[in-house]
Length: 157
Image (cartoon, rainbow, N blue to C red):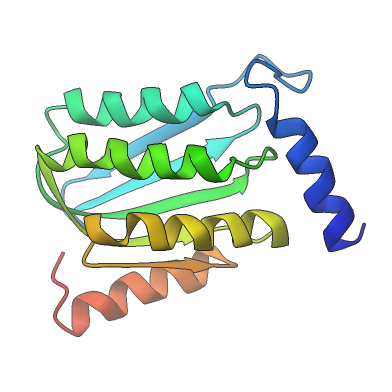
């Protein structure tokens, strides 16, 4: 499938926020907080809606373990619906509410597919003010290596 065809298919899928793409048996956003690494590991799966993303951020805001200074590893490898640009802006704004409770350090985003990679680059720009540094990667290994390197160069975890 060409990049243009992939993008067109994902845009079509993302226009209906209630569309579950035939799956309703999984939690679309899951996370864990590693107290030792000071890291939030978030994974987004399909089906994923805009409401799921906002619910995740509200859950983080209410989670007592989500406090202090934490880095973020966000993996959207398995999410198959693209967010709209306006939704990315709203998510970035919602981060401000979470920041009232936790200080975000560095954020590494994993997005191997072309269209999602491009949208996450847009998110990188919109959300940059909420993180010490944010960068999008094609693989988990690259993202994790970058987080480690950030810590070694002064962006402590």
